[in-house]
Structures are given as structure tokens and as C-alpha cells.
Length: 95
Image 1 (cartoon, helix red, strand yellow):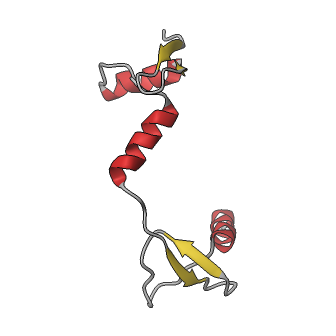
Image 2 (tube, rainbow, N blue to C red):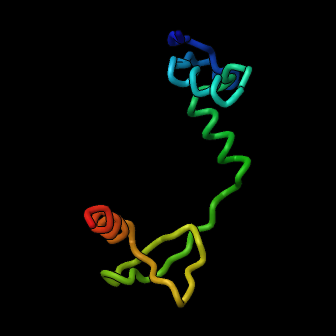
């Protein structure tokens, strides 16, 4: 029913593909307008609107290394570095 379309980004002028799957998603959500910007420009616009994210340093509860996280750590909750967090998620998925 849908076919990929090539559109031009109004921000940077580059062409981008509005895929059949994306068109279907837009239709399901009731969006009537096609995207005006490529993914890179949409992401940049979202990040600019959100503002710069503040990062906090904490000690990883697993390995004792430095963990940089986008939230203020609390004393009553463990914080994991990205490597230990990934291992923890893998082991929980296996259970």
C-alpha cells in the first residue's frame, strides 16, 4: 500500500527517505503531514529544545569504577557503570 518516498529536509536541504513503514506508522497515529526534517535535524531540534543534560558521577555498586549517569544518585539505590548495567540486564533476561 505504501511506497518509500524521497523528501527534502527543510532544515539542511538534504534528501531523506520516508519509508513505507514510517508512512504506515504516521497513518496509525493519525498524523496527516509528512515529516519536514531528516532524522538528524529532528534529533538536533529535540535536543536543543530539551537543553543540555546534566551528568553525575557515582561509584559503580558492582565493580567500584566510575559511573556517569543522567540522574542524581541516591544513597539507598545502587548505581552501575554502563558495562555492569549491561551485564546485569543480560543476566536478568536469561532468568
